[in-house]
Amino acid sequence: MAINIKRPNGTEDVLPKDVHKWLTVEKIVRETAENFGFGEIRIPTFENTDLFMRSVGETTDVVQKEMYTVMAKETKFTLRPEGTAGTIRAMLQNGLLNEALPQRVFYILSCFRHERPQAGRLREFHQFGLEMAGSASPCADAEVISLAKTILDRLELKNIELYINSIGCPECRAKYHEALRAYFSDRKEELCETCLSRLEKNPMRILDCKSPICGDIAKDAPLILDYLCEECSDHFEKLKGYLDTLGIEYKINPKIVRGLDYYTKTVFEFVTTEIGAQGTVCGGGRYDGLIEQLGGQKVPALGFAMGIERLLLTMEKQGCPYLTPKTCDIYFATMGEEALIKAMALAKELREYGYRAEYDVVGRGLKAQMKYANKIGASFTIVLGDNELAEGVAKLKEMESGKETAVKLDEKFCVNFDSLYIDKVMDSIEEAGGELDLGAQFGLDGHVHDEHCNCGCCKEDTDNG
Ligand code: HAM
Image (cartoon, rainbow, N blue to C red; front, side):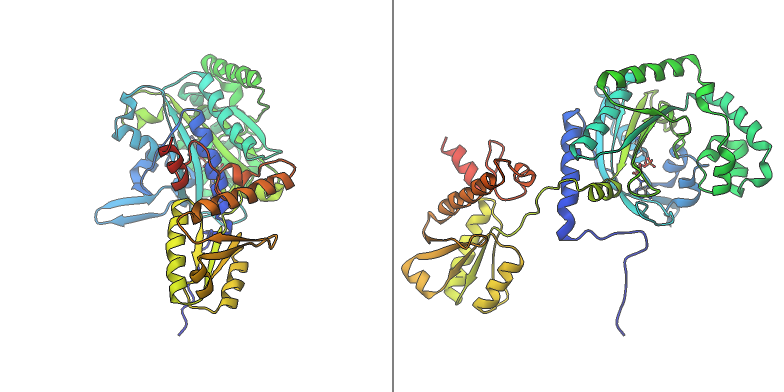
């Protein structure tokens, strides 16, 4: 019987033809985070379930409905539904908070939430996120918001609005909770079962319930901004001032409460209306109590995460540029065993130079090999047969123009190929009106030499002074 196993609902495959889109986002987020002084951290895919209960919060949708949890022997483990909890756990466990503060880390990781899949909402999705620990100043809030904005700009995304709010500290939150309890108690019978249980424990969670009935009731609920204490209010005012100074446009949305329990003071979201209902491409805020809650020192912290799939959906919609996918630089079409062995040697050397070189590994005839070279979009092809080997010269064909150049099959082959390749890149730059394409700039398309290049030929240049 044929096996017909499909990928689980709410998961995606990224095929080689699309991977350059991911590389574009990953490259830009990494570079930008590094520009702002953040270092990459990698954490486990699963953690002790307690970590998420204590940080994300027991009354959140994420913990109550969406976690993938397994019991292994005596311990409960959960696939991370987000990156903050694990990152803070790792910072504490590895003593990072005893080093120079603020500590700044970023991550690119997969997250798992058992939600109803739809466009922009997956059960396995990917986040780029970052956390900064050790600053209570609103200037740090402006700094991370500015970092997020820089990424969106560098990805060339447009029409993304920044919404900010403050959800106060435990002091103002207590008064706000009272006001919410009073408000929701009047319509208690209409609330869903989960929200009914939230009413006592954590009424603010009712504000982001996904049930349309609860959402409707929540529309006229009291707003947190009316309950802020002086310190929280002052923090929010200063943040607005810094954003103005940085020229970052924002709108105040007093309804943003975020779906995770650890937030205090500033919360923010970048939202687009162009990808449907799941338009929040980035969400974050301050969480001054979390580190202490997880057993650490009293260290204020903040951060955000962007959904990579949502960024990509928006980029696709808006026709944003990607790095050019890397295709085959040179394909050796071979006739006979001796030619194949020569192709193997030359390809090996070219690969050391950083080129993508391929030859026939199937045993096809010449015509079929050339058809294959065409299909994979080889930039150059070269045919090696008995004649070429005997004469020590072969014709290198530039596939786009059809131009052929005779090249010697000697120890200078790679150097000669290199200069022909550069000529081709220069020609295409000239054709494009002098503009270097994004792919070439980032070194994904072809071979761009600069002082950071670590390929065989550049190393050779450096070694030779
Ligand atoms: P979050 O708002 O739950 O925050 O998620 C951050 C981003 O991840 C969202 O804005 C969205 O782009 C993406 N996202 C969330 N759920 C899904 C899903 N099911 N499918 C696709 N994308 C999704 C956090 O996770 C916090 N840890 C962010 C943070 C870091 N706050 C402080 N530091």
